[in-house]
Length: 501
Image 1 (cartoon, rainbow, N blue to C red):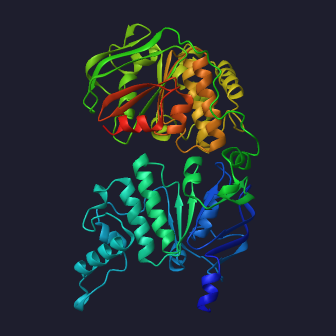
Image 2 (image 1 turned 135 degrees about the vertical axis):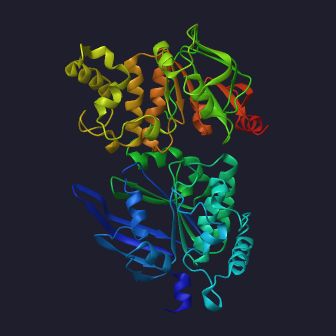
């Protein structure tokens, strides 16, 4: 093919893409066009078809219909190896590196240069890795073991693997899900270097602020179909949400609760733990949302687990509605009225193979006990009430919870604690991995919990939801509270300044 023609051609054209699975139309007549040196965002709710489209581009799935052109040439991507050979590198959420290998070994995995007798040229591998990092400005040691690198640097290694293969298209799937704000800025700097080299970047994210910060163009999918492709400048936050969910959200951060909090429901004094917390003291009142913010390693999750009785404490005092959490364990915490929505709902909250009813009623089974048996009719009626109240989307109460979306799983977990009866609820990263439509519902649910008189303690790394939902903000760094701020007047700058002390 003529070089000038390739230069003028799009980096990628996907047209008329269709994909079906048994009983499901995942994609129907979807198109996507990427230009060299540009950042193209791909957005949509969970189930919109983003992952399927990415996997087709990565060679994991074959499309049932449609064509794919790379650099103007029609191609058939039969496998991930085939896609990589065509210049397509997908950096999935789950980093695909070998922990025990060095950075350089991972970069050239399967293609090590060899000398006479078949011996691997380790020095050459390190030198080539170092030269590659220097070219794009990556500050990564080629001799470091991958297991010792933070997630942000592991992502850089994944991206460098793409450059080592002369990739022309780099796809990033929710790349910031485990990054601090500072690391997100580093990621954006890397993306700008990639586009400066003429590489097309497809950026997949739920986070609106990131899309407006880094993208040039935005494509939205909904229910497996193409909804819109527009320059970022033609979008507002409201218009982008409307394209994604098909309706306007009147208030992303609703506030129906009263302005005057009630009695103290949670009191923490001089808390110290083996997990690194020290000198922790705060209160949370009925009808109040107290937001905790901190960078990675600040101690938010450790605090969440300590105040519900999960992690042991060395010193200090925790009271729930005036009663000490003693003995300090989760059974006592639940009995006194405090519950936790864990950051890792799949490993620490849900029983994935069981149905909606079992997951929602787990903490409250004694309510429906009839001797050694459970009154299933009353149990299901109570669960159905919360399914209706929270508009949990499920075909029925017998649906395995692993088949529900992340937002609906989260609402089932909230139902579990409300069925039990709570005074305090601790929510750790309540919207992680949840699309914008479900986020709005979770935000409304948190506001509703506070309006019903619960004290809500929210741990989050998302600045917009911290400012949008909280009444008071506690900032953490190094296992300590470094600032207490009024959410009505707090700024992002002072929150971040307190977080990096």
